[in-house]
Amino acid sequence: MLSRTEHRGVCRLLSSVMSGTESHTDREEDYRFLHSMLMEKKLHLLFKIHERLRRFEKRSPVPVQEHAASLASDLAAELIYQDWTDEVKELVALFSKPNFKSLLYVHDAVAQRDFEPSLPPIPDDTLEDDEDSVKIVSLFKTKDPLGATIKRDESTGAIVVARIMRGGAADKSGLIHEGDELKEVNGVSLEHRKPKEILPLLTRSQGEVTFTIVPASSKEEMSPNKKLFMRALFDYDPSEDPTVPCKDAAFAFRRGDVLQIVSMEDETWWQACHLGDSNTRAGLIPSQQLHERRVALQRPKALFTPRRVKPPVTEDVDYGAITGIHIAGLRRSFRLGTKSSWDRGAAQSKRWSTGVRSSLRPPTYKEVIPYHRDPKDRHRLVVLVGPSGVGVNELKRRLLISDPDHFGVTVPYTTRERRRRETEGVDYHFVSIHMFEEDILNHRFVEYGRYRGHYYGTSLDSVDRVMAEGKVCLLDVHPNKIKHVYTSEFKPYVVFVKPPRIEELRLTRRRAKVICDEDDKNSVRIFSEEDLEDMINLAETIESQCGHLFDKVIVNGDIAVAFRELKVDLEKMEEAEVQWIPAKWICSSPTKARRRCGHLEG
Ligand SMILES: Nc1ncnc2c1ncn2[C@@H]1O[C@H](COP(=O)(O)OP(=O)(O)OP(=O)(O)O)[C@@H](O)[C@H]1O
Image (cartoon, rainbow, N blue to C red):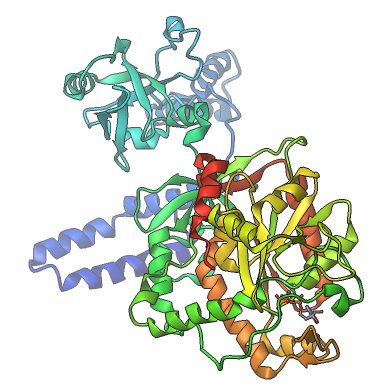
């Protein structure tokens, strides 16, 4: 029986249900019927049983006895031979009551899980030797449909499960999934059958229906090429996303994480698994389309704020003069010379801000494939990019000094005269204008430029030479030129060096000096406030336009911290059993890579 408080609670609840329904029941008799039904004692007892069961459900009890009915009848038989005391009489009378007997039968049925339909044993001959991934599924079918649709796979001719209806028998069983291939139904082969010939087989059958299935997941395992991996190019946190359909079903990821996409059926929410995560259950992630739409709506800010044009800075300064440490081939990059052209491009994007900018696609996901580097293979090329002055050369220099046998840099080509202390092939490759121009025509330069009437350039061959020595070639290029080495031949690992926030930039660069004229090595330029702002603006532009190419972003605030982070990251990349490279590299050959360099600009 319900306790008094419980009873009062139920009565109050049911009265409030009654008062809620009063306005909806027109007829007096309907109201009275409802009232008597809700106030029925049996209903209240059902509430109580339900509550008790819920308490037990949490404890998941196991039955102590599975044959209580037979035990009770055996006991009753034994008791007949005992003294008929009052207690014995009462017990025997209790055992013989039909409702008590029924209770024990029900108990036994539940204990033995007798309520589940018994399924026939799996036939021995169903499994063929070469089909060990076949699954036999037996379902108990009532008059209701199975809740699944089938279709014929156009490419293989196989019959596959097209859709599973939520809540149907197939869905509830959890044994049949979309994409599963149906081989047999009740032992009848489905080979060469059309879906419309199969449907009667399914609708006719009642009781147990046995399916022979090749699960979609095992088909996928058999062909790993079909797996789709994406590198995330943005951070995502579902707890900060009010539009996510179900927060628990979504998962957070960081830029650079590799995700295995398992379903792209929904245009806005894909299903994916996080690689490296022990939880293999798929979760929701925003689709490429959704993220692009969001970024487009959120980006009212101009990509670049054009500033005054500054005189170009020299591009041919021996780095040793700045740092006091001379390393052959380590020179000021061509990024200095090309900065103004990048600025122009950035300024253009500002001018087009109402039209073209909206067509710029924000970084979302990039399809990648696993790459298992053989120790005999060349190291990947390490490309460093960043706005001028951010510290690309400084990081490159520190890497070189940290392990000169492991890291190497290219020797640039020039058409200017060799100076007294310079050595051919060490400081520069000194070539004629004719040879340099021929190489330009043959697309042999990653990048090149002209300064004071002389050509300077980094050739693809010089990158090759460093890599052939078994070293990790460190290359810093203008972001526009990454594409010239973005091939399977070089497998570049692209690091974007980014300035920190303006406050930290001001603090850390206060004492940094840049030599701006090679003829006057004493003239130094301290970073002005505008230089620092330009650096940040340019970094934003580079990131928004080339972000999809970056494997790693290093924020160069404290140089020692940035260097350590870069070093550790490169070591991790080199030691990783699996590296993830763009899928499109599989189809690009070295010849194609060279041909692509035809886009070089002067
Ligand atoms: N984190 C830092 N803190 C303080 N000074 C820095 C830091 N990083 C770089 N510098 C200094 O800033 C100046 C410019 O750095 P660096 O030459 O490496 O820039 P860069 O990105 O290669 O640009 P550019 O292509 O114009 O040479 C140098 O004097 C360098 O020592």
